[in-house]
Length: 134
Picture 1 (cartoon, rainbow, N blue to C red):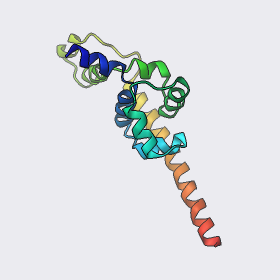
Picture 2: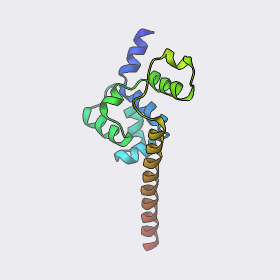
Picture 3: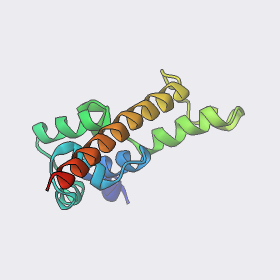
Picture 4: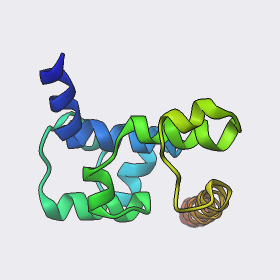
């Protein structure tokens, strides 16, 4: 059990996959932002180790630092949610107080999604114009 836990903690691909899922991002979207195929993202998420340059690109797209990906812990995410959503002593068991306002993070993510959506729309409009010209 301890070995499996250590493997998960150091498995960068799984961390990227989980962060991407928590942000509501599909592999296709991450692939587009990175300029690679969806299959390449799938392979990346299966990799235990990732080159620093690649990790930096992924972190930038996800709006994080490389250190935050390396230190990502699903426990911490659930602790943040538990402390934010419930206002009872159960949240105190985890003794984790976020240094940010989760609602601010949600708004930031929504704004980022708006930008991505606008870029996607612009790209689709360009495609339509190119097809009309043929």
